[in-house]
Amino acid sequence: MKDTKKELSPAQRTELLNTLKTRFEKHKNRHKGIEWAHVQAKLEANPKKLWVLDDMEATGGEPDVVGYDKKTDEYIFFDCSAESPKNRRSYCYDRKALDARKENKPKDSAMDAAAAMGIELLTEEQYRLLQQLGEFDTKTSSWLVTPPDIRQLGGAIFGDRRYNTVFIYHNGADSYYATRGFRGALRV
Image 1 (spheres, rainbow, N blue to C red):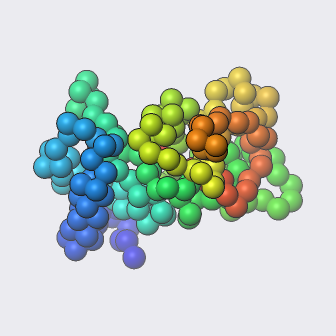
Image 2: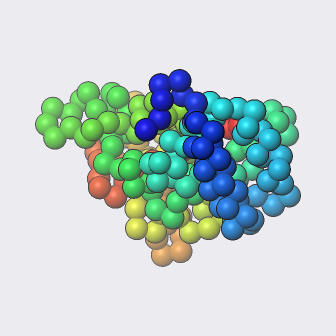
């Protein structure tokens, strides 16, 4: 179990870095032109970000590097599990939707759970980028950051891949399903 300082033990840190390195080397198409040594140095300098990545890993997200932002000198990680992370499903969209449910409330909302983890839900643009790196959510779906005008009307958006096509749909923000979760992004 993690301690309350939000810092991994040396053994946990080594295990996580090994997991991330193995995934990085296995999926080189996700991060062309990026070297692991640079990513690792950045991670080792940011123990709080390692904590977040460990949480992403523990909840089934399989985080991996998908880009580098030259302006901010940050590596970008997305949840790259084949399906929406298993331990982040059956959530409604946000706190407002959770509070609006009178019966059969889900255990949490995607926005609250993501914030508690220290990640941000993927935007539609990020989700489409992820889908260019592989085939994700062929049996599940993932909540996405919803434009304010849609959210004000009670809706929220999610994405999935069916029939070799990426679809972005809408649903009531208070809905939740065993096959809908959320994917996150983290900058390090």
